[in-house]
Length: 308
Image 1: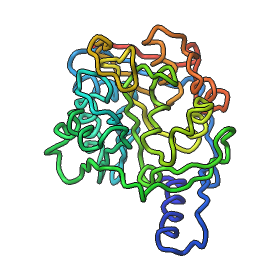
Image 2 (image 1 turned 180 degrees about the vertical axis):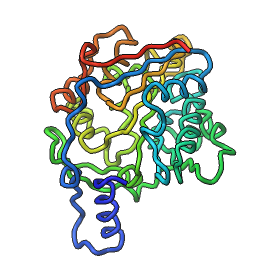
Image 3 (image 1 turned 45 degrees about the vertical axis):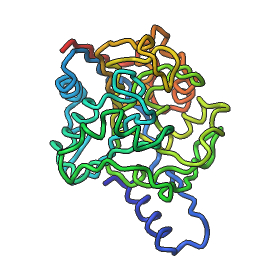
């Protein structure tokens, strides 16, 4: 467990034990100074019909699961399960993508893998109709598909934030040794697209509607605190219009593709191009790049593209 994770665990333990007389002021940057992104972040794009092999090959090309999970780790795999939609409607992450990443985390030695999302529709219907609940059934006691417990949202100081200085973030994300972000690529009525950085909405509490003003900068501010070890953008079928909820199959484009990167900004920048848009089309990408959180220029990335 990294220094910052240990710091969060200690602070949360004090809070839950009643040893703090005021609301805790968790500050990620007190625990770990921001590390400049690599000059040439690696972005992997894989395409193929076999989604299990697609995930496995994509992770292999990204450096292998040992780069992202160590023996004894607690791992959060965070898909989008926010909507009461079927797999083919492309509003949620594909269940086979989620299942295979969970299996890889177990292969990497994870002692526990947690999967959850703060859903917009009824959580039980979302988990079931997305196919994710059934996909994870039978993987054993180390795998926990959980419903959000609102008591676990912890107030966090965002010292590097410019538009957002404080917000509640899910305790299990703060405490996890490893965090794998698994959004689905789709259109969004407010942010234009929802990709990796937007998926943070599923691990934060409070009145999320208040974030919609200056949303791009607020997502970048949250990215200074919630830092995935790996982002896997599920573009196996993309919701091209009427997102984020969707519902019409006519709005779905099947591309059988994944984008993977340890740099969530680079993942979003490349993922944006799958919609025929320039890599700097999203306010969140531009804001995060300006803050030094990752790369948005394709020419400054090491890009691997493979058909599986």
